[in-house]
Image (tube, rainbow, N blue to C red; front, side, top):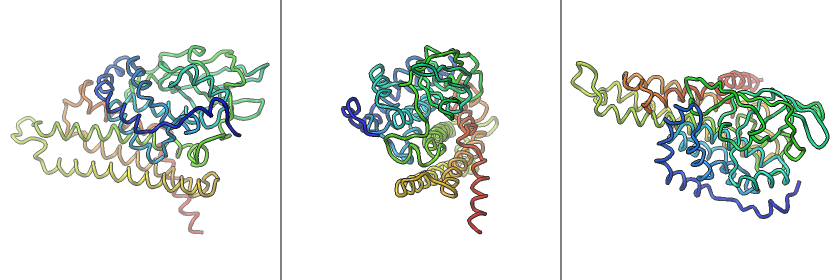
Length: 384
């Protein structure tokens, strides 16, 4: 489908502009990290920083005025944010993924409405279709409950996937946050500041222009519809894992220079065992990053060349890379964490925050080790 009018006026932005804004605002991002955890939701100041830096536009198609950041490039982008502020990194993961799909799949009329109301819109999203839509005059009636709506407490809209009978199948809807009910149920050990609460909708009217098929791509490159769901969000999810892990490694390395155990005259940093574990952890992070980025580049190249969705072994291969990279980084951080000592257990320590969040990132369905089961099966199939 061709676009005109509103979209004709949209010009792609450079990712360098967003990076420059993040670097300039880095101290402010850092300052909000603990505050968001205390509030169990993103602070308003953090939401404002995300909007000022135009972070949600990084994955938006160029045709809609975004950067259309390639999958492998997303790893370092989301790592940078998560390093500074884990809540910001996780929200950016959710906001970019949802806005990217909206920009790729929705109509020009939908996009004009969203970007006219909010030049840098903040979206929350739940892709699991646990609620329903029913066709009515001029649109749909929305009902149901959705879980894990990260960042919805500061979002302008929430993007939901629903079960619809007319037309039969999944239907995506975009709802102003003010029209749904939020539940204060985010009491967790990891990702504490994300405010990933449940939401319910009761007989909410959704106009036709704010709905679309989540599977029909209208603009943008291969990453939006041809490398699979896990491939699409791999750079976001693993970028988050990598960023908080990098922060943990740096903080422990800094602490080890002066930290002494009781009755031990030497510092932790002087121990050969620590030096080896620190080196091994850093090497593991670098290897996981390189492996996943290589697989993302490969998958994107195949999908672009064939102009078709990845299938079979190619899809299993890219999905396995996400699961392996995440799990391997978590294991490495678990081995390193004890060297930080009891002081790292304090809630104001960035070490414990990074450790909790790196483990929490592995609970996301994108990072499940079931992907390795599928890749193992694919490897056996390839021997036939």
